[in-house]
Amino acid sequence: MNLILKIWIWITFLKNKNSLPTKSNIINPKMEHEGMSGAFIWEDEGLWEVRNHHLTDAFKYVIHHRMELVVGSENDVGVMRSKGFDKQIFEMAKKYFPNWIGFDKSRCSYNPELADRMMRIRKVADWRFQKLLNEEY
Figure 1: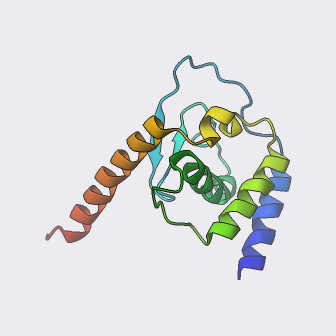
Figure 2: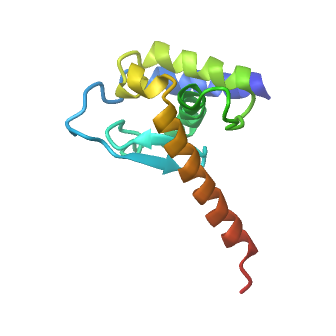
């Protein structure tokens, strides 16, 4: 199953090569929680604007692994598929979108302040999701 998924992602990346923004026009871009992956994107990364849902689906592995890089090993963020798979997809994306603003070092490196903020936002999002699941109608 992983091989089929990896091939599908590779084809998706190949078809959309270099289609994501490389520069930001926003001075202080807002970070937003992405519910499907449980990870974060910045508003200037172009992932919300992509009309190709296949590309956004493929990128959930990329942004999830990136979050793991930012929060460091002391925070468990889980995985989308497996740590190895997520990392392979991250590296594959870097080949097809090498100048994507989302691969900027500041968004892919350990940052204790950003890690703390991400983990707090995730905790609230998880709490809200559990509350929604437990609501009685």
